[in-house]
Length: 113
Length: 112
Picture 1 (tube, rainbow over the protein chains, first blue to last red):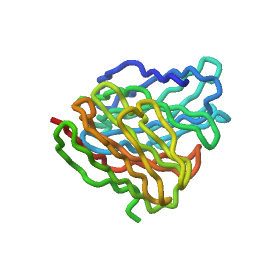
Picture 2 (picture 1 turned 90 degrees about the horizontal axis):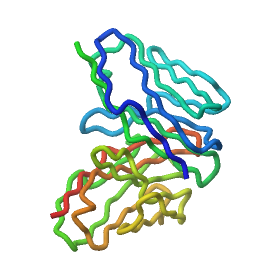
Picture 3 (picture 1 turned 45 degrees about the horizontal axis):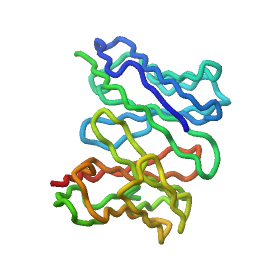
């Protein structure tokens, strides 16, 4: 089955700096890659997703890049703010009715004011 | 439009007791999922459903059962609770395989 790994497990940045969170996946047939943000005590919420026919996607301060050859994808957050502090999960899945998301273990991002 | 609603939000059980967690969605989603979240372990899939009347095992199904008698509801059952099942349980749903999953607020379950 699919295996998704996130590196590093924790990340601390200064407010205003950029943060990059990387994920690797094992199943070359995976073609849907979402990122979720989870604040303490809250539900995971989708912040951005990308499909395998696209190499990059942006939404304001957030972007995701995908390298299918190397089987990794990254979340980029620019101009970080304290409210960006949270746990970020990446996930991957194949297509099809029985597809299911495999999540990474999560990365804790801390933005220092 | 409430999205995904989980009940109860908190529960404390004794070892050996049984209970059912309810997940309800009002978005007409076909796919529904039950996850457990433990510190440092991410979200692990317990069971899932790809439509009314269907269920399938996920990564950690042992000790749990599910039912999807109605499209909008997905029930997770613990027949004989064990301390190892202490966790936060999240339900999620999505319209299609490549559409975002929407999560409920979670159920915090403690088994003594």
